[in-house]
Length: 512
Image (cartoon, rainbow, N blue to C red; front, side, top):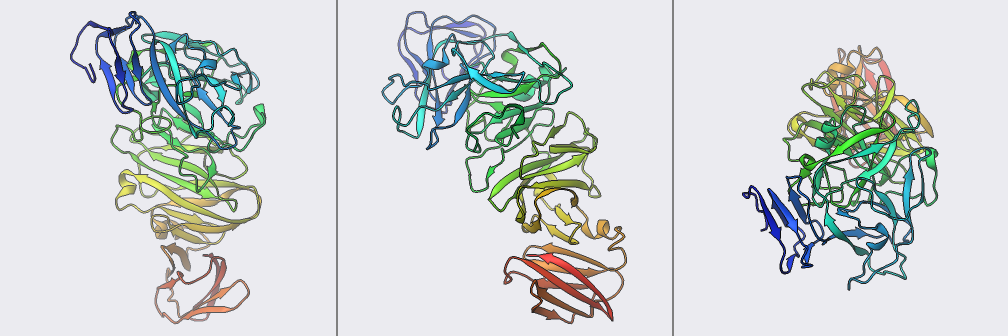
């Protein structure tokens, strides 16, 4: 019955072993209910799916598996929900032989203070819980196969989200999850429940987490990846820039996966039904690796701190979007090291904008935990940005403009917040020429490994490059409006450009 899609109404009577051992197969049972009352084995391996599109009642228990990647220190939690009815989450840890492994702690989330408390693990449709990893003495392997046993959840039901104070942005967070033994389409779920439901959903990524004590309302939110369902775009959690396991959530939520949803009013009833179920395989931590939709015009940037912590933002252009603050924008957690865009004085980590024009300007802000050298890098791009449209980062403090498609930008920053230093532009010469500081004279920007100096009206007759100690590193006599300074042999650091335009001297600070 694998991948069955042409049956209008029937009953799958499991009379012998039906064992789906492949992790990338699925049962698409259109019009079919599952009858496992004879006690036969029906097992869905890790990442396998059971898809149904009718609201019939299934009978009998099946098995569903989900692999959990464990940390070395075993101090982390996973947000988990059972896809099978009446599975107690205290009972899902199993060793390689199927023997029970103790779950050290099972916690529920309290919306009123954003803290977690001990739970019995009892099954509540729609609710997810936080499960601590097993101790190394109880389970030594790096991957654990959690096992759920129960009747596959199917059909429609409602779940109530709380918000104890709708005027407080810390309130309204509810730990829910994908209740079905198949992927969940988060965009469809949001669309079905959009009234008074925040479109930004948060996914706990314990690969990014460094906190081992609860902080409640004081937590920065750094270890949460985000997905804006109104925009169809996600961003990674803040974490080590060298950690390749940090992932960007997509619209497809994996079996057993819990996440935070925020109600904008108290006692908000949201509906789960088969229309939000996605027939297909799961390929990554949060769901499918890529969206099924045609790429839109969007890109992702990260700022990397001296401690190698990366903070990511996304900028997305939509035909029917809005440049003001709307539901197509997601708030920044504004952690100790954070990059964000600024929209209507709000700090935004996912920025939805109107249709793309190359005259647009995106204002950026940043927060720095410590004084030191930082880097801004282009992580990925789609649509027009994946073709011939360049993305320039303008540093208004140094006058530098860097084409991020050709290289990263290194800069020095002092500890604290900076809200007016950076902009994203798409026509650097035209935009910079309107600035009072550069209108008449000079534009300096970075193109790949080179510095470029362009004059607006007077030729550059002489140019000298000094290091921070005042030593002459390069000298040129271009006698032209444009000079290219190769910088690939220079060490990282601050340099001073002395630009002579027939006796008119200008100095510019640049950073390699």
